[in-house]
Amino acid sequence: MCGAMLTIGRSRTNDVLLHDSKVSRTHALIRCLGDGNYYLTDAGSANGTFVNDARIVVPRALVNADRIRVGDHIMEFMTDQEAPVEESDEEETGETKSTLLTFGSVVHRITVLVSDIRGYTLMSEKMPVHRLADMLGRWFGSCSEIVARHGGVVDKFIGDAVMVRWLSDAADNDETVLLALRTAHAMNLASQQFNAEFPDLPGLFRIGVGINTGQAVVGSLGSVHGRDYTAVGDAVNLAFRLESSTKELRTDVVLGPDSYKRLPKAVWEQNLRSIAVKGKEKPVTVCTFSFDHLAIVVPE
Image 1 (cartoon, one colour):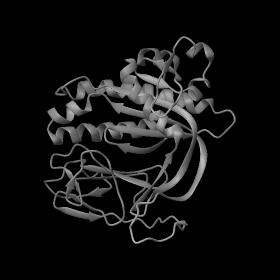
Image 2: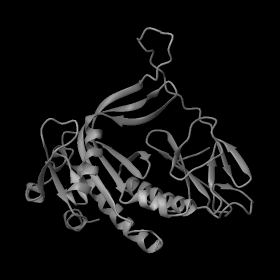
Image 3: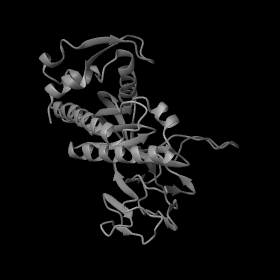
């Protein structure tokens, strides 16, 4: 049985103990994120972790019958959790369509944080794959712990990015924005430690963060080929746009209007900017923070 986290390795402290010289002391870990989604992460092993014969570099979402190879050992991932599938109203045709399906989805007001590693493309080009996997495994593990500490849910890992969400349906939901800011602050502190742990990086380990609050569909979403419990909608899309805008604005953290307005006015009134956002007809007013300023606003 796999709980919130299951570790695999050669050390006796692991949940799955493998007596194999090809297996590192702590080789890999499986985390349960969101609502029943399991991700496999390599913990910086020397010989790599494989899913269906492909080496993983970033955390990999697991589905039934995935074959996990660690050293000379092969394990099969299985879960008995099944969500009811709603029938599609579309008429059948002779073509196979990749239709988006929803399984018990609900509209919620949420606060979304998106964090991205700066200069990741250069890192992936310059660093050996095992070293890159080591770094990402540790980084995503660190982010997962930070998010859990601040009451959030890691919605997904996308490449080098992390998407986090907090339900903010309550009338007084300022707390979710504060939690998101504290999470961003803690992630930055963790990123600074990585520069000391990985002196061979081709550049400084830095992150950018976008935070937005708004309505989104939260539930089990996907196609006929698979599904994930996640959040989708304009609020989520804007969070990703805001994270991307940190590069253009030359800042560290960008908050959307529904997020910064839930903070005391004195915190944001001197930090407003107007930016053009793809998909929006009018410019969006955002609030920007440097991590130095954020440390003053919401210290850990």
